[in-house]
Length: 174
Image 1 (cartoon, one colour):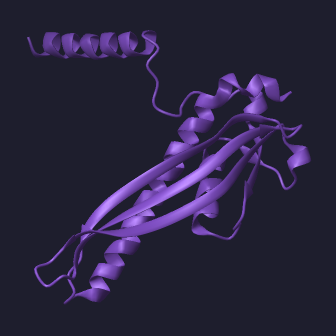
Image 2: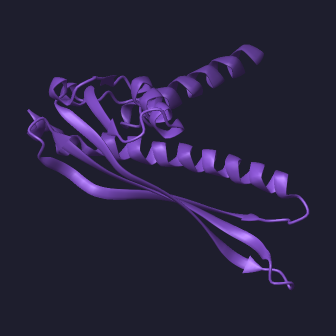
Image 3: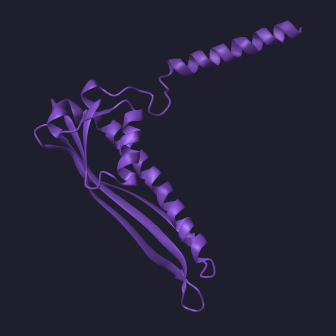
C-alpha cells in the first residue's frame, strides 16, 4: 500500500510539472532576449552613481552586453533624468513634520543606432511614506536611506521589464 501511494504522488508531481511546462508559463525574466536586444549602450549622466551600477549589474544578469560607445550597440537606453523628492505628508500637533513621502522619478528612452527614438521618453516612479520621529533623527535618516535603496531596486526592475517589453520596437533597430 505504501509503494502505491509513492507511485501515485510521483505520477501527480510529474503530471503537474508537465502541465505547467506545456501551458507556456515561465519564470519572470527567464525568456531570452532577441539577439538585437542583447547588446546595449547605457547612457546615464552619473556613471558612478548607485543607480548606474545597479542597473548595469541587472542588465548583465539578464545577459545584456554593455558597450563603451553608442556606435557599437544597436540600441541605446538613455536615462535622461533622475528626480528624488521628499515632501511632508502630515504634521504633529506642534506643527512639525510627522510623515514624509519619498518619490523618485526616472525618465528614459530607447533609441536605435541612428538616434531615432523607438520608445519613450517615458517615466517610471516609486514612492514610499515613512513616519518621522524628531527625537530619533539619526534612525529616521537611516530609514529614509533604506527606503530610497528599496525604491531604486523597484525602479530598476520596472526599467528592466519595460526594456524586455520593448522587444516589439527592437526589430526597427537594425
